[in-house]
View 1 (cartoon, one colour):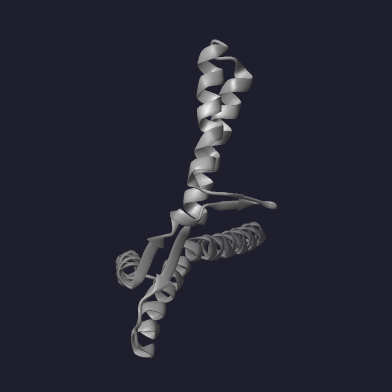
View 2 (cartoon, rainbow, N blue to C red):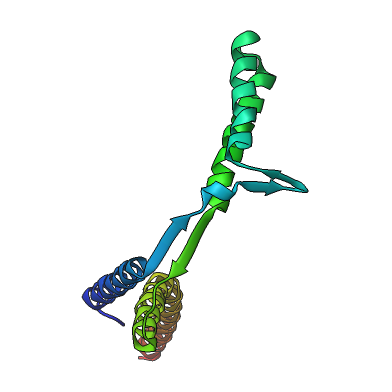
Amino acid sequence: MKKPGNELLQFLGGLAMLVVGLYILAQKVMVSSSFLSGMRLGGLNMNNGMIMIPLIIGIIWMFASGGSFISKVFTGMSVLLIVAAIVISTNISLVHMSLYEWVIILVLIFGGVGILAKILLASRSVDKEEKADRGEIEDNRKKALDIEKKIDKEIEQIKNEK
């Protein structure tokens, strides 16, 4: 059976590996935006100004109609369109790094995840082992009681023979 302190140290070590690996990876990623190009919906190319038009229409419609449900849905969809345009225009790239750095990052991240998974998923298998051990102990108790009953019967028979 494993010591609980050992599992806690492994969990903290795996968590530290994961955090350090993700921190180093975050330092090696460049994020940029090219929002000037706009967004393409089907065959229609919408630049930045055209993406704002549905929001403007939705706001005017909402105030003119007294806040009808359809105008609120239209305005909400316009906001989602703007957020989608921002996300689509975001470029994520890695900076130049050596293979050694890349391997260290991968070992830290996936090694940490592996250790965490081992500790978090091992508790279920330990529970199964403990249940099996309890079942074994219960079987041994029953056998001991059976033997005790047999001994008691034999003692009674010996007493009766005298």
